[in-house]
Length: 79
Image (cartoon, rainbow, N blue to C red; front, side, top):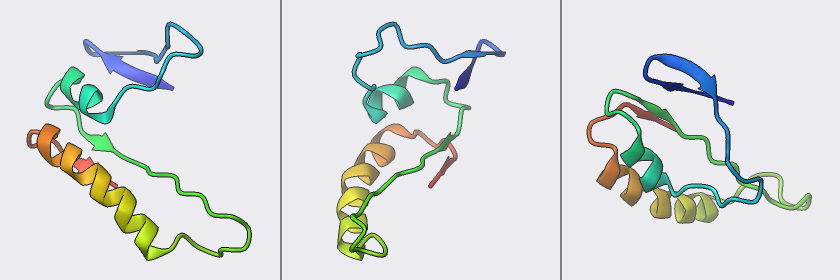
């Protein structure tokens, strides 16, 4: 993966292989306000479930949207 930093594309490097992923709020707060976000949420179900149930989608989105609302600060955000 890459990121743009000071107008230059550079590799996205984690300093430790086992480092925890950053919180979404921290990512929003650390990026320039003219940087938009394309958020892709992966949901898994077992082979016995053909698609993710609506209740599970609602549960995930209800946890995610308050962070987006609080930290997006007018950015373009796509799901």
